[in-house]
Image (cartoon, rainbow, N blue to C red; front, side):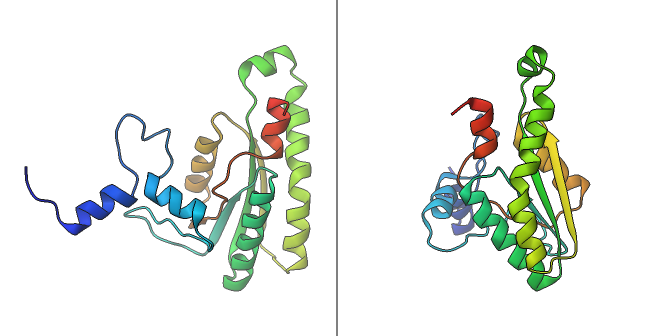
Length: 173
């Protein structure tokens, strides 16, 4: 077995590892713990990516944690003159739509309504470049990744804590 350098060990312990579950686990376990337990913001930078502050994307699910992340993104956008893209993705499984096609409109309206406080904050802070998006898609992370590619996003600001009001509506919790 060849010896590994410090860089190899660092990547293995902190970064995301490939393998069978790599698509299910968004970041490595150490990086995830640091992000969840740190008392400060944590910027996770994947290898071979460029950090850009021209356009910032905020995935927003209506939760308190997502609101806090959105407020941080608004501050960053205002400070650096960046455009802000606020996106809410709701998941409507095919069986739900098949049972009641009106559910799509209900979910869309609920998602759009959840964005209003963030829009008011952005307006109050003088943000001029704001794009608001509501999309349906399963799984939500793929829709967000597609948006990053389509809109030439340089930075994604999001909470490390899970689902909020939109999912509670879907799951009935």
